[in-house]
Image 1 (tube, rainbow, N blue to C red):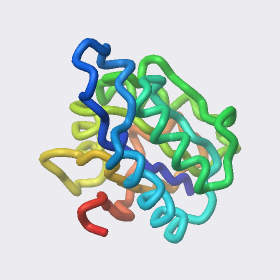
Image 2 (image 1 turned 60 degrees about the horizontal axis):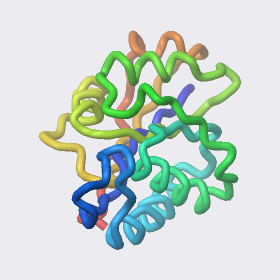
Image 3 (image 1 turned 180 degrees about the horizontal axis):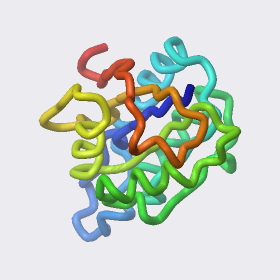
Image 4 (image 1 turned 45 degrees about the horizontal axis):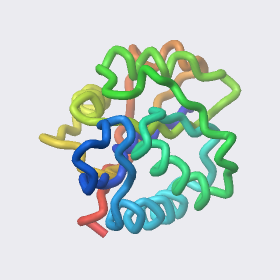
Length: 163
């Protein structure tokens, strides 16, 4: 059994109008929401084997805040450039690269691709994956290469305004 958790980056700052989209950091609310959502996730899941993230600053910071709650080191986070504004196909392709020894992964990425991706997972749909939203599924597979074709079972979908 493999578990996939998908997280949209937490709320980002728009304070510096000249800053590139890639460089935008988290704002105060994002820095507050991420540890709360991570603690909630930890209480439901326990350990997560691998942390995978877009390298964009807001996704990276969100992944680091989650990793801290899970007792992981920042250097353990795996970054894939292609997760920055990734399509559904690209997100599936990144998941397929996961080592089969890994039983659970958490992926941090962006809209609009993340909303389309979670809508492809289990029949549970959302109009918009909220910032710092957490969506989890599991699949009875041994090989991450089979994840895109596997029957996936919805576990939960939560976001900061729910807690």
